[in-house]
Length: 502
Image (tube, rainbow, N blue to C red; front, side, top):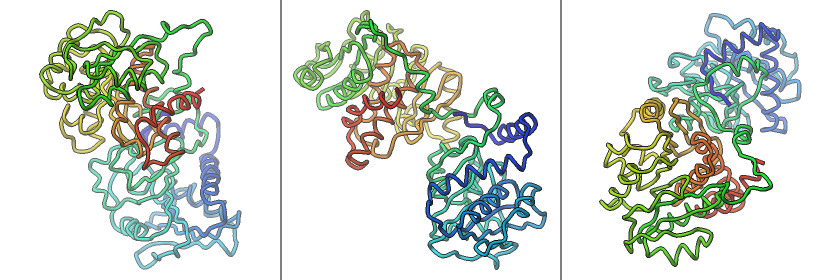
């Protein structure tokens, strides 16, 4: 699913109107029908509704929704913001379409005295301003947003919370932005939805299709992309009847040190659960009884050092290498990683301590094989590349870094961002806060390693891995709850995540 900027959406609207053809008023009606169906799904019993509509086409969507709700016996108070310049033509046409029923009341808001606090049982709908906003709200609109935010009601935003810019909010003071519980975005998600700093304004969001021209939409290059089920289905490689384990790769995992062998075990189990044919774990000698018991399917290459990995094994048998979970950051591991980067051209994924070694030895970044996958959480990212003013600016800088070094970076978190060497960004849209638990990142590393060894292109391996990881976490949370979720629970649900994709 593409993330488009405001101008691209406007042009897609215009193209659809001209080439379907369809009147702009009827396209607005199409959007309002989608809004109505989703609203009544969220609130199935006729509830009292207060709609705040602006003078533009976002307001027109809200006015059309008000009509449909009133026609279906929802009591509606429609408040139209009057800034003295009239309404857009489509918004005005929708005012004329309003039914004359006792349970639909229309008010005009020109100043602060015409604002009121609705009763607690009312649902508030924000249809004041859309994603085309380019400067912060001020005056009466800003005060109206403050007024709405001071209400304790459930709050649903149409297309985007009013006051929020669709793309970059770096220069938006965020002092007058609607704080929605739910946002119903028309046609595509907004880039702003992917930024952690905007969560308190956007709430839960959902995209509603409004039938814009598919061919034109496909011709556009998005600001980013949201990973969805249809896309990962296209990525997934179909297995054939006569395939054997040799068809599915032999991966090498360099992981573990005394006291941190669980990281190696989690990554190993995740690799094998993700379709890998063969796995060899290069681990310190102390790991032998532990890993042989916990992961009997894995083969072990024992390091000469009892407690830590210090020597690189022969890389000849392996189709992909993963390094980092629990491996340590002493000089022995620095030397091991340096040797690996000097010898290996196999597809690689680096996580955890391997990233910390890169951060302390930045000259090693230039030695990474093409399209190496790095999987940092935010703290590891900051150690690697430094601080940024916002998540938006962080992603813009990360695009340049990935292009310069020909890397794939999986920046973990809500809406995990997979940043590609061509500067495309793919955002994941599954997963849950319960996955913020020890070992969850090791599981993701294991999945990436498995897919790389199975000869998935690194870009597709990263995308499919984050989707599988999030889906498995969601399946686990459904049965045991977010608070009780363990990384090992994610591993056990990887199989069900594959079933979901199939």
